[in-house]
Length: 304
Image (tube, rainbow, N blue to C red; front, side, top):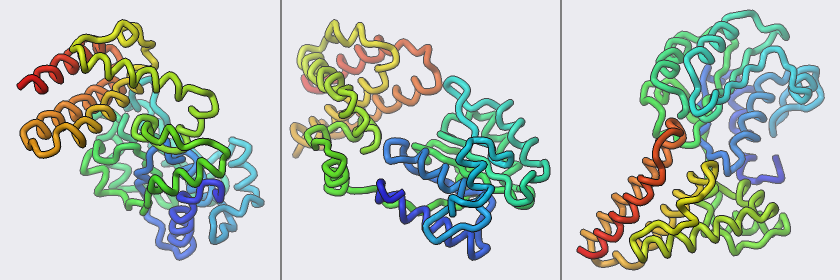
């Protein structure tokens, strides 16, 4: 965990709860995947299952840690979205497994990754387990966007404290990895420095730069560039996030001193993020029509 410094303190805090006997039955980890959420929640799960945790997390040596590292710990239950959603059958199966006796004699630990992808039925199914958890049960509820979780879910979890790194810390970390910092503009697009480092290494960052240029041209003319109309389906969410960054940059510069224009641009930017969420849960959305609508609306706002 030392390679990603901003993840160290949450793990130390979690371990302190564990060793003091104050561990709750459910912990909400509201950390974006781009900041290393998967690594963090897996370290939390391993620590909770470890028979001899140290101050900084799992010991890495006990039988439980060895089973976890090998990917076959019998009391560990990771849940991910099945397609676009976490479905009720997945939650029901998890509940059934958590009701059994721990095979290693300790805790049973579950991770629900990107919990905002639970549909209403699956979220409601989980509520009862959060209200009446079994003994020695820990559910780690991870979310990239905790605000999208049902308030009833949030209220039944203890939130793990996390301080996101600032831009100078991210720049220092990237430099330590031997990577440049010229692409810091797209941090909101990729979600955080972990994904940014990956994109710098595989040069996907150049794809995002081209998308950025195409959006600028589209916003200027009021018509979608041909390249945006032909964008790959697996890139549309990234493309919309680039558009969001451009709208927010415009908001900061051109709308300064004009409250009405600022309000309209902020509303349009919010609409873009709503479309992103729709695409994550309903992939059949006609995103090209939505993109053209947003570009046309931008032109209308600018002309008024």
